[in-house]
Length: 150
Ligand code: ZN
Image: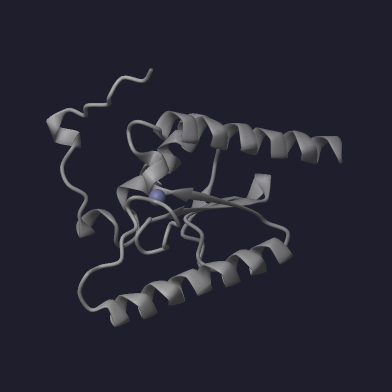
């Protein structure tokens, strides 16, 4: 039995457009601050790489994208809902984002990068800890593998 999660009022404000657009939005900062606190060093918004990854950990051959669930069409996610108005416009816009994401991922893989996607919904207060811990485990495993394989 899990207890219902009741967020304090300050955290339960409604999801709105201001939270999901642009760079240096809060979700990316959450991941960056966490990594920094754990001793990981990274570059951010690296324009030289496909898709301009939000976080680049060169030492770990890993790039991280922190994706807004709406803009990048997180399948099956409650935060992805097609807007009721201007559907043609949104469909074209979002589909082109998704196509571009796939293309960038492929290009990064081919260049030898490990690509990690973190969705905005995975950084909500109720599951943020698990998401960040899983990320750290994945990065450490990659580092161990690199060490073992010379
Ligand atoms: Zn989502």
